[in-house]
Length: 111
Length: 117
Image (cartoon, rainbow over all chains, first blue to last red; front, side):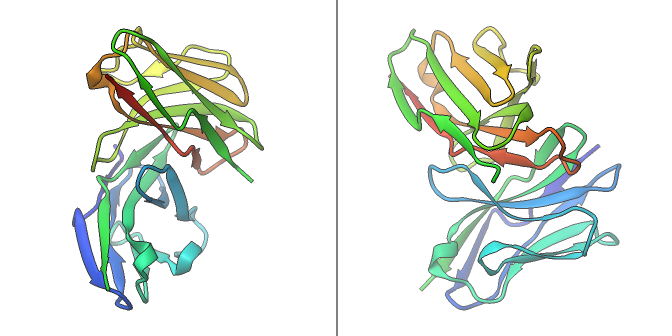
């Protein structure tokens, strides 16, 4: 069975501080992992994806994530938060025909 | 590439009427499209999976007679909410998967905000 757990439904960081959003997964097959961002009243925008190539994946807007098989994790990071990063972030695992989403993490950036 | 559009972006309808939402893959062929529903401050809930030319597969608890899904071509899927009620008010998001994808990556539309009065 596949599942995704996002620790922390709300994360607040100061502008310029490190952003760390946690994602752990369980998968019975080698996973494909994704991070999406959602701004209010909009669809999901792909930030980055892991598809069994490099374990450190760089995405858009300065985000990156590292796939750690031993920890079954795929945490999202950004060295320096911007005000425009305030949004909802979803981690997802792809298995077979479906996506399995985490419950989401709302990121607040404090000026 | 890989752009998915939805129309309309928002709609208000009266209770008892039906509403159709379109989902289009603009620059690729999508053999599979997905419909999600999202409540405020919550994650996406998969409603159904549709494959071009065949009947949609609905998730448990989703009324197939209420949420009619048609995937008539490789670039278009529609969701019709029949006899809408206020509890159907929600944010509906579609996604599409390329025919040749290995990772199963889905490309998401911008969503449709449905309000039933």
